[in-house]
Length: 388
Ligand code: GLA
Image 1 (cartoon, rainbow, N blue to C red):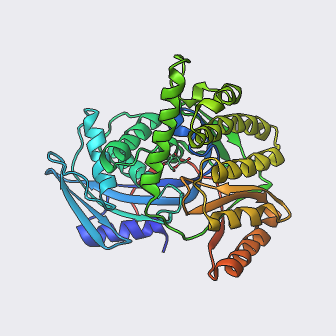
Image 2: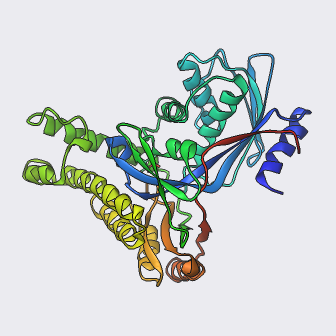
């Protein structure tokens, strides 16, 4: 049964009527630009063909009910008195309702079912996919006019201020604005999105270490604070610096001796990362996959050594991919501390890459990683749910 059929059937079984709308919001891989988004820099994600699906219908009272089919749990919440975060999956729909209401949008209560094939905690933006799916469901059912970027910002606010993770805006924009066959060059200061064609000869392979780090959220927030601290120190003499986006690699190098070494390395990752995204996106526009792959490799090394968000499992997967014929490049994707590596590979070599990654991982760690090819996908879509 497809996930679409599953959310519709689950909805009908639980709520005794067909849904009004079915929404699909994708997860994403990030090809370049790790941890640059919350520094107002550049990123190059692509939405993928793994997604959160929501089937929903309007209710006439103020109680919303959301059934998570993968967990067989239902959350009920009052739209006029949204409770504080609970620390579980239901924070995402509840947080989105809160963020949309904060914008003065009148939300109807809904019944909804939810299912997803974006693995949770793997760095593929499972939470952003759920947020964007619910935001789009409410947008469709209420008929309010919220453009995709504004919707992504509302979802980011839900994650920042309701869920409590100070993420950037990349994941929500990728899920909202993805384009099949393309990556998205996103300027996280201006929020301009430029689709960049991915050559058809290339495939995207994802390898999941299956390592889930509970520290990811606290370490993530700590990295963000470290970047803010560098900005504070630079601002003493460089008042035009609003974020690390305003700092060139050369300027930062001049400051090397005045910053604590760890902070310097965090900032070096970000400022060189911005440069890598722009150079590689320009090369990709000319079909230069080798340049993209080389930048992915350097990005991983920088995330490993300067930003220190990699792990032995991710390093092994990335290094294995680098050594396989036909693979252009590979890096950890998402926040790090576990989760997935993404590789760009010649389509004809993708099967061999998957096998090599599985074998190397099993030989080192005694278990098989999940490894598969995925395809870039369109951003969030809604369909009228006329058929089961
Ligand atoms: C997570 C966050 C994003 C981004 C990445 C790292 O996916 O949600 O905003 O910061 O980590 O690039």
